[in-house]
Image (cartoon, rainbow, N blue to C red; front, side):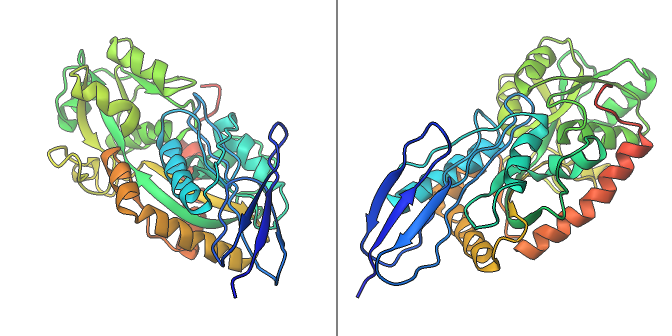
Amino acid sequence: MPFTFTVTLTFWPGFNPVTVAFAEFLEVEVLGFVAITALDGTFAAAALAAVATFEATVAAATALVAAITPTAGAADIFGRSIAQAMEATLKQTVVVENKAGNAGNIGADLVAKSPADGYTFVLMDVGNLTISPALYKLPFDVQKDFVPVAMVGYSPHLLVVSTKVPANNIAELIKHAKANPGKLNFAAAAGMGSATHMAGVQFARRNGIQWNYVPYKGGSQAMTDLVGGHMDVTFNGMVATYPHVKAGKLKLLAVSSAKRWGELPDTPAVAETTPNFLTGSWQGLLAPAGTPKAVIDLIHAEVQRITALPDVKEKLETLGAEPSKMSSAEFAAWIKAELPEMAQVVREEKITLEQ
């Protein structure tokens, strides 16, 4: 005999509670703060509450159970795709809330301080999260206050230059930059210390280049200035950058993935000339430390199921992103390895937020 449940979704201030009746045993997934009461029997349910961040423009997090990010960007794409799939399961609207600020740290702090009850998560660019401890005085500890749930997906950065820059490939860019030390302006689209800024730092570091880093609060203005010739070069996300390449307004030199990207087979990977170079946007889902393992396993499996759906996978691929198959343990190991590496780069390059 199927169980009957009354599920009360109690959202953050400003939203009204919604009650939904389920007459069968099903997985209850919601993005938001959720209270579940079993009318007949006991049911351990997890609801998804997510907080997503973006690069400085609208950088942000969202409340879980439903979805994520605000405007264009990898987090938004992943979050809304997952939210739509969950809506289909729930037959209920999934609300997306964005918590902007400090490279996603405001949203992350909200989740770090939330009860470890399996109802609250944060979806964000975890690349930024591994950089932040070296730059910010954070109110949370990345390794102690979170438990990695799922690496949702990855999308590479694009290395692009203004049409005014006399370079059509990486070798020509390096030669031009070395001949003009300190004269090229690199647009740090998401601000100093962001994943895109660090991509530029690592590229310059590996190739003996010196250029000026100009911080922006968001990718939109950075792209406008690059297209206008006011900036010379940048690494930036595919979604915000590739349309300008297709329009002939920017020159695409390379992708930052480990090998050539499926959607751009004729574009070389930076790693072809700079061995082991790998940067990009890694969208990860984390929960407060202490969240029950059963919940972590359930949500991880659900994320894997959703990102494997043909329509979701196709949508991500057309936008330059691919689902990740990392286990929760592999995700945790990735964060552990990235933290000291990023800290070393920040320290040796004397990177500060004020640069």
